[in-house]
Length: 213
Image (cartoon, rainbow, N blue to C red):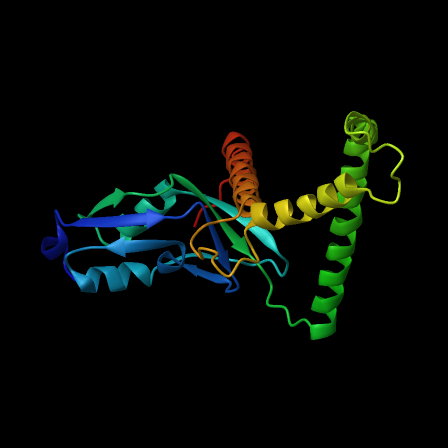
């Protein structure tokens, strides 16, 4: 396509902050979404190879939008590139891995074991710290039930309430769960991921470690 035919045409590009890839050749279409009134331009720009990964290990590669714009203008001079996404972004390269089912099951069991006992210890430590037992004893005394040791209704209700509260709070098990509604845990993980990416990009920019073509 000649320069005169594309001069002045706007090409819109929206790049995500973090892109996961298993391919060593990173194309522009892999890292973002493109839009132009000329579909042929979208197709050709998307096929531009932005970077070729040479390492044989999992790694993160930081780029600037300037690298993308420069490469597009090099191959399509005269086109106006309009960035609607991130100014700096990460390409997260992962080696293709084939894991057996037993390995996945083992990981799930191990993580579940750690979370279960960790949460149990945290709840017990909290109850001891705020002296929940003494509060229950005071309530039994106020209602003249301190001698009825066989009926510990407050402890039973409290234990059931914690379990139901956790299930409701994390919103994973209800048949009425809204599939588009993220759980609090998913929100915190997303915040952590965004903060980590921002720190990586800031360090790479400050130390001059942005990758180039």
